[in-house]
Length: 318
Ligand SMILES: NC(=O)c1ccc[n+]([C@@H]2O[C@H](COP(=O)([O-])OP(=O)(O)OC[C@H]3O[C@@H](n4cnc5c(N)ncnc54)[C@H](O)[C@@H]3O)[C@@H](O)[C@H]2O)c1
Image: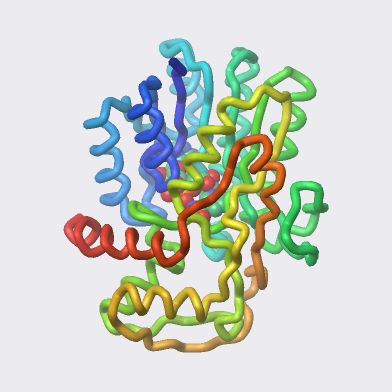
C-alpha cells in the first residue's frame, strides 16, 4: 500500500487521480488552496466526494512551508503526485505573478521539503505547452523544448529543469508528465470544451481562434489517470513522458461533435490566431506506451458524451 500526497487534489486531474488511488486501496492525503481561478464551488464539490471516499483533504498553499513540513512529519508518504499549479495559457497575460507563485515558488517549496525525504518518489504535472513553437510533429520527448510560447509553458519547462537539478544533486526520483488537453467530467470551466458547452446550451456565441483550424490532442481523463498512476510505479531517477491521445482534432470538428452530443448548433465567431496559442499539439507516445503501458482508448465522441451527461445531470446543480 502506498501513502500518497496529492497536491491540487480539489482540481480536475487531482480529483480523479485521488479517487482512483483511494478506491484501489492506497492512503491519500490531498492538499489544495481552493483558489478562485475558477468556480470554488466546483472544487468544494470534488473535495466533498473525495472526503466521502476516505481521502484526507487539507486546505493550504504550497508556499506555506511550515504546513508542508508538518504534513510530511505526520504522514509516512511514499509518493507525491504534484498537480497543484496555476493552469491556463491566456490567464498568464493578465496574472503572471500567479504562475510565479504557484508554479515556481510552490514547486521549489515542495522540492526543498523533499530534500529531507529522498526516498519519496515525485510525479509532477508538466504540459504539452512546453513544446511551444516546436514545428516537428508528433511532439517527442526527445525534441527541443526551449521556445515556450507563453509564460505558463515557461514555468512548466522550468519545473522539468528544477526536477532534474534536484534529482542530480539530491537523488530525488521524479517523473514529469506532459499532459495534452485533458477533458472529461468534473473538468475545468476555463477550458474550451467546457465554456463551449455552456455557450452552446445558453445560445451565446463561441469564438474560434485561428478560424477553427487549431488542432488539439484531446485526451480523456480516465486515460490520463491510467498513465499517471503507472508513472508512480517507475523506478528511474529522472524521466519525462507525454500523455496525449495521439490523435489531434481541429476545433471545427471538435465543435461539430459537441453540437451532436448537445443536440444544438453553436453560434460560431471566427477570429485570427490567438497570441500565445500554438497551432497544433500532437503527442508521440511510443515511450509512454512501452514504459507506462499508456494506450488511450476513449474516443472524443465517447468522452464528450460522458462529459455532456455529467454537465447536464451534475454540474448544473452545483
Ligand atoms: N487539464 C489539462 O488539460 C492540463 C494540461 C497540461 C497540464 N496540466 C497540468 O496538470 C495539473 C492539474 O491540472 P488541472 O487541469 O487539474 O488544473 P486545476 O486548476 O483543476 O487543478 C489545480 C489545483 O491546484 C490548486 N492550487 C493551485 N495553486 C496552488 C497552491 N499554490 N497551493 C495549493 N494548491 C494550489 C488549485 O486550487 C486547483 O484545485 C496542473 O499542474 C496543470 O498545469 C493540465
